[in-house]
Amino acid sequence: MVYFKLGNCGWTLRDASFGNRIQFWEIAFELTKYNNFRFTILVDADKWRETKWLDFPYTKPSKHRYHNLKNLTEIDVRYEWLKELDTSKDWYIKDEWPPYQEGDEFYGKWLHLITLKDKVLKKKIKELVKDRIGIHIRHWPVIDTDPRSNPVERFNYVEKMKLVKKTMDKHSNSKFYISTDITYDKPGRGPILPKFRKESHWISQIYKDYDVVDYRDILEMDDMLINTVQDINNPKWSRVLDDEGCYINVIRHDENKHNRIGLDETYERKTLRDVVDLFSLIYSKKFIPSEITGPNSSWSDFVEIYRENI
Picture 1: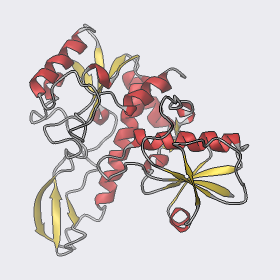
Picture 2: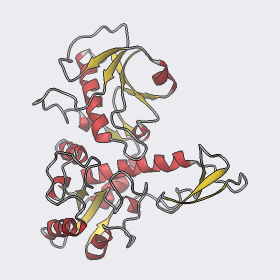
Picture 3: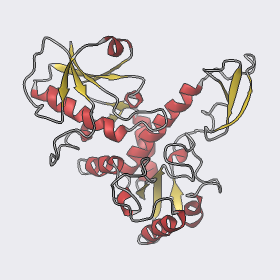
Picture 4: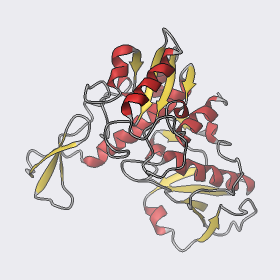
């Protein structure tokens, strides 16, 4: 078996950059299709955690094999890349951002092939959102100088809330599913598994004034969170997490009281939350993308493209 090894463009524990990574997956799929499916797409199982819940055709998640494939010939997808390749060796698809040449419109060609593995979860999502409007509310970009247009001044939470409510009011007597990453924290610094109904959250106003559900109405997140995790760099100490996955204290580590689930489990649940958010927006009866209330995003693009193919 020969492989197209994919990078992990933009991935961090808190921001998985799925919308970026998936564009390179589509390129790899197009390449393997062009070469009569003689290649398998190889991804890092630690970074592509979505593969636990989503089926990516012709794709293999791996830890050992992925990290042992080295010194491969690179394919730079910013230049001419769709061609017949030597099928006797593995290749590495270089994850330089942005992919494609300026003016190319390749994104979205194969997204509809990605499906939920868990049919019970799929049914639960569909039942919850079938009569709801999905709305994606995006935080301000992580980078202050991000060039994307934004209808609200950066970090003006009051005006952003007015715009969100004005948008929702256009759909009177409607029910909504909300997917958002916006909190009072800087982008990418908020809780891992937020409880948006808490009054401390900016978005909580929406829950008071509208019929709204979110990922916590599908997943039992309270039971999945941990209380303490041993600090990797300082093993004599443990960090205490609250019910949203935020660090709130540091205590001396006690092996007898320490929760052995580990912090990794919390981040897995964060990935599951992302999967549920994505497909809840996809299966909603109508969708309001992020650009209506803030910056545009590849996440909203994914939803809109996928909805056109179901």
